[in-house]
Image (cartoon, rainbow, N blue to C red; front, side, top):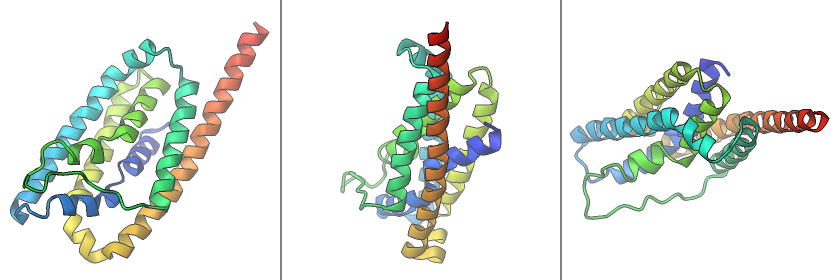
Length: 202
């Protein structure tokens, strides 16, 4: 997987366009001049979490005795379920304290940005090529930068695209992610079959 494909995949999983309405709802009590600072701070926290799993993900996989094929299959299934939610969105609800004016870590950094799907994708990167951590780090930073830019400009995108436009863009991204997830699933199954055929012949 190239840096570009990894960046696009992670950006689709981060789903910044789908998060715009949730961010606007969560930050509605926050003065406009402070919103960008909060979004940047929460995005930086999410970036630190993703980088942590990039470097600590391999030991976790070894501890659980998981190989690349099993993670590829499970990652494909997870991403396919995420794509279905993007294509057929439900009314996602952000559980936040109504008296809390400025959120910290939850729910913006986790789980809206660095959620289980993003963490699983980073773990998938480390499983594929553990030694290429610099490539995965660059892909994470690039995807994070794109997501952060969209979220900081959330008010602008909301005005230009509107609710229907945001939903249409999210569904389009969901369809692309569905195609990627199917390919990932097929690759994982192929690797699993090759591995067991080799073990059987041996």
